[in-house]
Length: 385
Image (cartoon, rainbow, N blue to C red):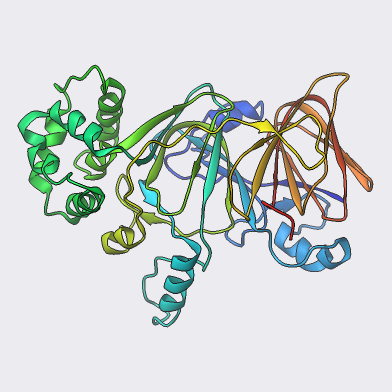
């Protein structure tokens, strides 16, 4: 069965008025549009377009047993549009989330909590815009020392702490604690005049972040992170514990179905430094750009973005007049159109999708066909149960 889905864009302040609107062929929005969620996550389940007024989680609870579906989806698919930086953040591993969620469940009802659920949140994003900027993971220590050299004496107290990965974690904790206020201010003041041929893009990005969040220690934390520029169709996979922040651009994001976020700067929201450091993986190194490969499992005309997690797999189908793509799902599937006009057909029906529209494909569909002229992304479990 194919079930049509829509949702209302979430209006986070960092969102874009134009990126999602342009994808959907609309004029710029009055308010920022940051994310559209496609899935059954209880925080914002998709709306089912069948006239019933149900959300996808309600539809699954009522109809799922009849189409081979039991329980919630293991993934959450999103359109993400950033015109300014998201918070620097990190997500827990499965074991960390289970332990912390159980621990916080014993707190009083009015207590402040860090964990919304007991799940991990690995994630992948594929650029839809021609340029997508992100901060992903921590840079190699020697390279960060060279970058800090461009800031002169102002950065010396931070540079001295970058001795090993444990020192890197301690340096981040120091920056976020408030004890490094003078060093943060001195580095921020020095950004205007800092010059480096090797790190020109990183310094330009830091100046941009400082204009958005003046005085925020996250600006200096960002100087220790890999600045990554994706072009359309390129992606990155972010494992548990990896510090990251999206800076600008439009993308398709797929993640495990969780809302666990520990923030570390560039945000007015709550920051718990101790808990962030507890789950942070301080291992430095570059984050590889992930390119699509031909999908296996009997699929035809479909590419996969490799990510070795059980929760999700992200596929892409690009079709033109006279060609189509065939997908053999390994579980419940969501198809999201991103360009052109595509048709999704299975044994129990067909739907036409325009950009920003999606279809939920139930597990009893053993094969679906995508035709028309355009592009669609497909989310499914990472492996069959």
